Length: 333
Image 1: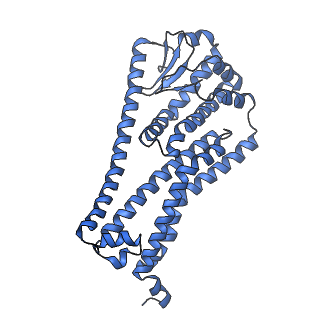
Image 2: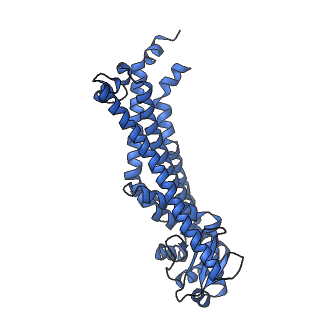
Image 3: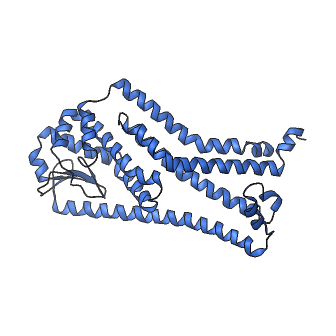
């Protein structure tokens, strides 16, 4: 048989209390991540010394928040359903009055009212997922339509994916589609030298190769569906800024910082909402970054710090679950 201490730890009330503490910790973690996290993440990634690591940090935080929310919803629903009609067990895992209602102690009507609340919460979660999918599909549809129109009216320039359109504004941007398209206005072509134009096009191609448009589209969809959640509301702007820096680094690696800087300064922001434009986001900050790049040591230091923060956020919920449910796993073993 089990040792006396292990038997006590395997009592139903003890296990349910552990589950309650685990659920509480997950709720606190998720709340801190979505409401306090954005300010912390912005402070950590604002300098842009390691933009790729910054993007990973933001995306890890968002994935962790979404995953933790799904776990919490499933946790509560399964707890109520599996302990339906068992007041002695259920009472240890949630508020006493709610558990008494769910156990049927106050009658069938309150009991089924609790079930209705659980069903509504699950329906809301499913509804958010459906709305998100529809919003992303709509944003992608607009981008694809714009890309198709550009390929109809523009003339190909180079590489098969670059099109020039007649316009008085100097602009360069890319839009997703089948295939994706880089758009450069005729005024931009006239104003840029060969090397500067090459750097701008390399910047836009880096967006396409890195699937940056897909990332921004998903984040804009989340922000549209859950605009009051700070993490999702801040993410599109902050991640788009970091992705522009990632594309800057790719272009500067090929053509040099000066050529890209001159190209950016010659352009104005005229990209549509569904696109990523070379000179639309945080241009002054990016120009300063290109003119005075950080040292290799500083970049490595910031990258290590951001990677460590991403690792902590990624394993946080799993660690809470592992510690909180260790007693139940020990009993099963």
